[in-house]
Length: 439
Image (tube, rainbow, N blue to C red; front, side, top):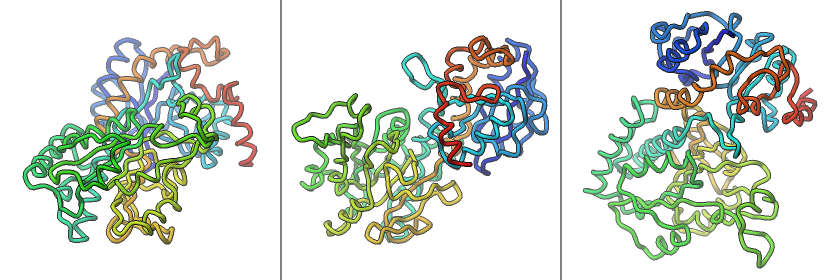
């Protein structure tokens, strides 16, 4: 039986999550009798005492572990030879910044398993941090915008919303925001912000998290095809927020004339499509981006589109963007840098095409925290751990000296092995091209 080690996260001071929580670890120990080490940390949400009570032993460094569980990338200098690592490596797209890390794992003759690629037979992810990025992003954009508007002399109840990391749990945040919702029902929102419209791109887990936060407030759904007429017609109630969820057919259209939108064709051949989202921008107060994106897909918000918006509207309605997906220079082109929870947002000047730090002052506020679930470490860790727990016995019992096929690793895990004993696996050999570019 291999020794399991839970590493101390060190990407930034906000990373307080863990891949396995003590209650799940205790069950694993009871079921397997394995030896479990937990690297000491002064910021992990769950304490060393809680892990010790579950049966784990504290340690310094990762040398004694065989199977090492983390959350975020491991610094290159901390990679130990001949280990099995599980973490979000952010290498599968050939990300330039992480090619040195991938090369170090190869050179160390280690095995790398990426949570992102642990999927079922239909390709659906099995281990992820759920809706918590959406929860945190929605909480934060409401809090930040409340402060932004207050600085401009526009008083809203949103100024009372705290940052996500200042709540003990999602439920605590929802309860507080529901209280604020009752104030909106009673007193309404400022006329200059009405109708208060929220556009949410996407309808998956992250979008669902954002929606459940906004739905703590008095909301009404408006279809994408109706939102422009709704706003242009001066409709709306100051005592409500209006939420529009945009799907792919709302975001893009076929380039060829006379061709109908086809979702599978868009996924397979995105080069045949162009963005049609710009014409919705004048109708939105806040924009929440929760859509998966790759470079081959069209952008939804461009610098040019934001400039046209500002130059063709007397008073620009769009005030804030929460780019939860957070692909820099990606689907939201003005997202030029990711942020952390110390300074979560910056301001975009849509005419000059420039950005300025901080969320107070002129411009469109852009929330670009690239690690939002870490702001809810209790909820997100518990959710993640519950998904990971069933795979741990197989990871511990595997024979890593055998071939991957004969190792005994569960099939869902085998698909997620990027490097096996120092060699890229067949499905990830394309990363050799990216590795060579980095040399």
